[in-house]
Length: 439
Ligand SMILES: Cc1cc2nc3c(=O)[nH]c(=O)nc-3n(C[C@H](O)[C@H](O)[C@H](O)COP(=O)(O)OP(=O)(O)OC[C@H]3O[C@@H](n4cnc5c(N)ncnc54)[C@H](O)[C@@H]3O)c2cc1C
Image 1 (tube, rainbow, N blue to C red):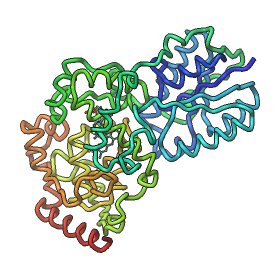
Image 2 (image 1 turned 45 degrees about the horizontal axis):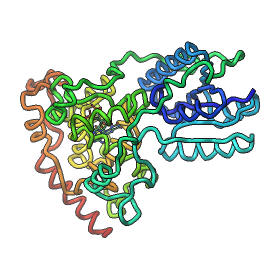
Image 3 (image 1 turned 60 degrees about the vertical axis):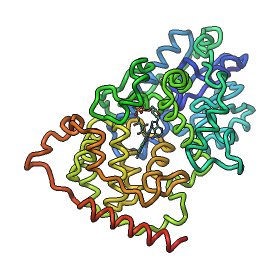
Image 4 (image 1 turned 135 degrees about the vertical axis):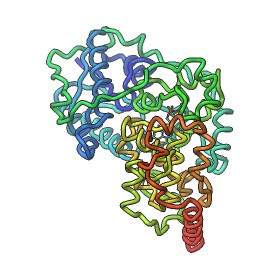
């Protein structure tokens, strides 16, 4: 008997899932699946990876939910093309359903799976689920993506309708009559089967933030020393354990500043889809030949949170310990790396990619290129934040610094590795020379 596959990727939930809804309404019973992709996992620097543990727990939860509803949930450790080749050869699969993924690797992979499915007489359907507007849905007047966030946000707010934020009824449709139980479903791989160790970590609740937090968000978001200063939902948006539409609805009702931050997320995802080359190269051709200093000792001090600038160090130490860093600390640490130390933004991007639990290529690259002044949308290259002023403005009582840099203020804390005034001038001179040479 024919069935359809629903391939979970960045949407590890049953509720409010666009592609899963379409699969459940296809007229065929559905078998959901997840692939632990060796193309990605084999490149990880460590076999103790917090994200792999997080994904594993979510996949196991999905497996249990599917079994409880009367279906089978498949999980494989392998390469997507090989996994699908096997599934399409062994079973009568009418179609593969999934949700769109806008990263360059994903676009290539999905193209290959579409072609493979066709060879087997199956269709491949991908749905928009993780953003509100994708690809070419919201371009500027020139027919290209807007080059300022202000104009993108204005167009986004004008375009969005209630229907764009409506939940999809996948949870209601997720019933035995719409699912297929496979008697010979293979056992799902464990972390140990895949050669990974479990990481114990703090993961914020997978539910909407409280109304009080959202109402005060614009006042608290830039104060990393406060408890609940921001939503901490980035990891759930990254893996789709929370629906972005639900968070958008809440933000639209209660706090325009939070809505604007979520619109940034849409914007960066659209930009990466349009400009996949920015994943590895500066968008602005005038800043592709910057003679970055790339001093390895200074990079190591930055990574370890030993720069002598407390807000930078607190952020980096929190990142190393937990896989999270508040936005204000990310801004300060990233600005310090690319401007004060004149280290290539790609080094910082790579370090964050290894450490962040919420790592998302589009958001990370977009923000790093913003800080470096090199992006499609970017802060002016000559803007150099003072890490001391950032500290005074955003952690005035040192609550955040005391939490992560307990030796601050004692002889044990290192002196600044570079003088701010000197480094600021050096950055401006270096970038100006590079900019003018290429203009
Ligand atoms: C150098 C640098 C690298 C970053 N890398 C990532 C990354 O890999 N993954 C990631 O999700 N975010 C990244 N961000 C954006 C931002 O710092 C995090 O989304 C935010 O800190 C997550 O915490 P939160 O959920 O409490 O955010 P909140 O302040 O509660 O915001 C709610 C949501 O809005 C979105 N958002 C908030 N700020 C931004 C922003 N600056 N850009 C885009 N979306 C935003 C996120 O989805 C976030 O979860 C980066 C920022 C910088 C400066």
